[in-house]
Structures are given as structure tokens and as C-alpha cells.
Image (cartoon, rainbow, N blue to C red; front, side):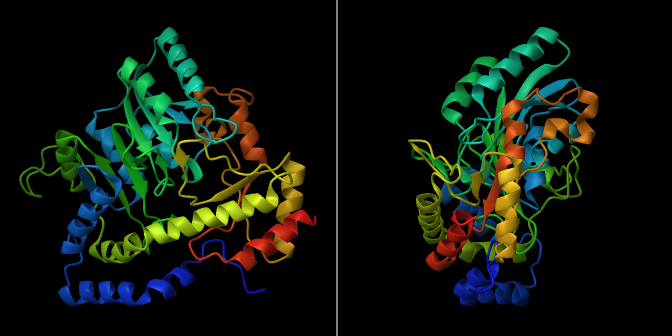
Length: 375
């Protein structure tokens, strides 16, 4: 058995080498390293792919989440509702605006934000009267969009801005609506480990609102007005560099084929591991980009035993995420306690992810499954 990669970027590069090398050479020859033509081309193609009217590329996925909150004027005294089981950036950007993250529990099967928990937390904030409910950050965890069919009505009824954190969702869909087209605004990441990743940091914001687009373009370059030396608001230095845009273009062109391969790989994993572990659930009417393939063990002991066996067999595995956000040290002042969000807490003790990418072979999948099934 060859060395197994968790996300084999080398295999992808070998497959797309001619196109990627040509893009890199074109950027070097043109020497337009910031805001070159490839950036605008990428934004146009991302709009076509997702169905959004506007796309603003950024330097990373965190700034892609932060900029829409800044554009909405969210700040001190505001409550922004965030799932507790996700990557730290989903809540960090809320705190960076001066607003307060209010953590919600997860759905047991999809791992995404539980709309019922959102409603409970929303009512609690209203009762307490200390914060003003302003927004929801809904994360498309591991590739499957959150349940926007339930989240969107809650947000409309309560006047909440709904931001889709599609950092892991690119390639997934809810019905005919693709990830990055859900909610009022969407953000994604092009970190190399993502299903659509560049060779450094990168991200993008998507919207159908012309005014939001205008504000995002300004915020991306230090709050510029008519030109970058005319500053009309506080902003960021958040541009995607031309080289990364060039690298992303051939990857975007190959994305559908890679996405289909990841979905076939996920089906094979699930077929062989169902009954041994809890395999990922993709709800009816939804599809997943399967940026990650995540199993759920019965408890911490079984998870540890499985991961030890995989390591001994030369198979990498990772825990996303070992500690829920509401119990992170930085959020201790908010007063959350263990047991407040039981599903999210249980997931941190039981989930683990297996190798997944667009070039994963059947023999590697079969080998990994044999290791797990023979523990």
C-alpha cells in the first residue's frame, strides 16, 4: 500500500499540472501580481457556478466572513448566533466586530446548526434584553449545507441577517440552490485543504445585493471610496492575489468531476462502514461536497481505538473539532458551562475524519475500511 495522504494535493496537481503551470507562467509574465485580470475572471466564473450576482474575492476565508458583518454595521451590543460545533473563525469574526456570539447546538445527524436551538437561544436573548439580535452565521459543515429551508424563515421573521459560512460547503447544494447562494450573503474559503483550494490563503464573498457588493469592494481595500487613496470608512487589506486566482481557475474547471468522485468515494466508505460506525447523513433534497468524510464513534474510547489502529496502519485521520466553541477559554466570560449544548459537546467526543479528495482510489478506501472493520 502506497503512502496515504489525508488530502492528496500532489495527485490533483499532477492531474492539472499543464493548466496550473500555464496560469502561473501567465501571471509571472504579466507581472500583475495584485488585482490582475485573473481575479476578475475568477469572480465572474464563481458567480456563474454558484448562481450569485456578485462575488468579491478575498485574502482568506476569515476576512470573507468578517466583511459582510462589517458591511451590516454589526458591533457592540449586538447578538450574532453561531453554531458551537465548527471552526473558531465562525465565532471569531463576530467578536472582532465587537458583537457577542450566542452559541447554538447542532443537529445529531448532519452536525449543522439546529434551527430549534437557534429559536431557543433567540428567545433567551430577547427575554434577557441585554443584547440586540442582529445576525446568524450558519455553517455548511463537512460539505453539506445547513438547513436554510428552516433557518431562512426564522431570520426573516426576526429581522436577522443570515450569513452562510460555506468554507466547507462549496460543491454542496440544497435542492437547486448551490452552496454560496444561500442566505442573504455567503462566504467561503480557498485554504488548500478545502474542496476548492488554492496554494495559500484565499476566500470569497457572494451576494445578490448591489449595495452590499459596493460596500464589500470598499472594505476589501482599506475602506476606499472612488480610489484607494480616498478612504471613506475603515476597512481591511483583504485582496486575493493574482497568483492564487490563476491557480484556482483550472481547479474550478475540474471541480465538478472531482466533486462527483468525492461523492462516489463517500458512498463506498459508507457502504463498507455502515453498522460499524455512524456514517454521514445527507438529507433528502440536499447534496454534500464531501470536503471531509466524518464518522461518528460510540464514544471517546472507540474513537481512540479506531484512530490508533489507523495510525498503526499508516492511515491519517483527524478530529474536527475536539472542543466546542462555547467551552473555549476565550469565551469563558460568556458563562457557558459543560452540558449547555449537549449535542455539540457529544460530537467533539465522537467524530473523526478519514482521507477524502478528488483522486482517492477504491483500493485505498477498501484498505482503510478493512483496518476499521478488523479492529
